[in-house]
Image (tube, rainbow, N blue to C red; front, side):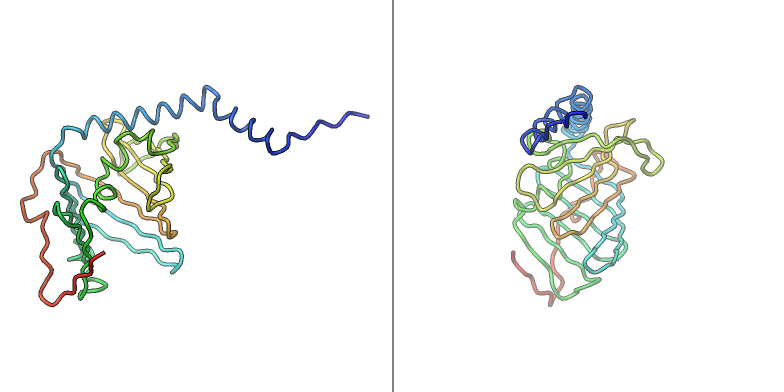
Length: 224
């Protein structure tokens, strides 16, 4: 009778798993993904301002609903951000250097939310969030290739190793020019937010008012 192979046990399985992760093919794929992120970081590093059209898709499993939006997003150094919706018209997220504002009159025209710009900056600045020292802040994995808006892209999964407001992220980076084309966030509350960027323009000046917001008269400002 054939002898039964000994069980590896939990410790043995762990060693096998770690050994598989260290295989040259796996390491090479991970290194390639990190290199792609670094190339994109170099492209964004010297940029003072940029603007792009965006489409946002928000999946809310708890409510079994899906919400979409579109508009224009601009970013300026060192801590300026403006995401203004055409659909639904009037909704916005603005970081003016001191505060981060969120105002969504399509759902609540009477309330605006204000937080510290320092607390909000990372999640709004895709360059800082995903491209600066990614190997120190994320478990980076090559997720293959994909096509976004007719352009070939690399797809990279990034799982935070530090406290974060999302469980994991997928980023799509253009193969022709190292530019972010899409970001998908799997948030802690279970929501999935996907932002697709097009007509990305480096060095574009959107004007001073783009990065400022004054709540309309009668709107209650909630501080967080």
